[in-house]
Image 1 (tube, helix red, strand yellow):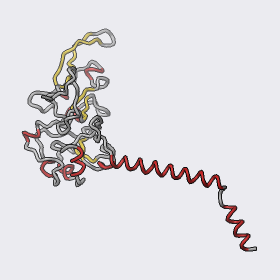
Image 2 (cartoon, rainbow, N blue to C red; image 1 turned 135 degrees about the horizontal axis):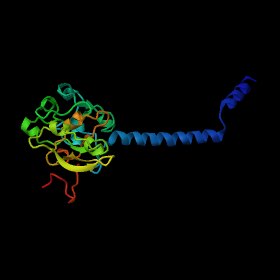
Image 3 (cartoon, one colour; image 1 turned 90 degrees about the vertical axis):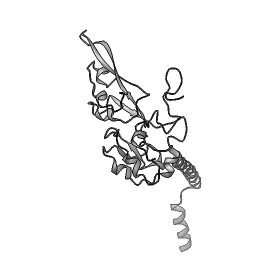
Image 4 (cartoon, rainbow, N blue to C red; image 1 turned 180 degrees about the vertical axis):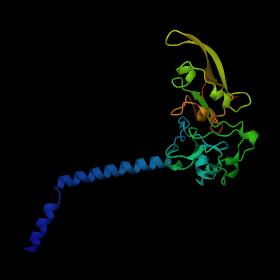
Length: 245
């Protein structure tokens, strides 16, 4: 009698045979896909493909190629500590899971000081190569672009020269073109609209940091044109990447 009662209790709490099979099948499929996805996430980062780059992945000047950088960087934070403008910060997902906490520049907070090489001096593993000041000033870590919907001379026909004033290169990477525009009430005015010279811009980010539009600046820097990655170039009208010989 007791044995029969136990079998009845067990059968009562056991799901039907077909449901047990379906549940197991779903678990196997979900587990398999989850494992595959996790494996891909850990193995792939935004620059694993030569045709794919992450705009926000702006490494400090002197950083080696991305694969080598990720293998050498030990996430010690020394470059972040010595940056005088507080522009170097840890990544989250910009470099994929394997790149979490590796250093990138955040120009909404600070910029790369033109005369500074401190981050290149303190890296213990040479993920960031040591550079002399004159060498560092020729290294491109990115390229600036203007957002014509937010830059004051483009969007509101108001002259603003803040970005050009702060541009540190001996021959300014930011220059102006005087353009006659018509305001809403028909008034014609001449406005200085800024342009970027991609040959001179090193991507230091000071233009983005100093832009008077603070929520989302009218000028921004991406990783395009970085010296360390010859594939990450901007194509000009002739179809050739700038800076190529």
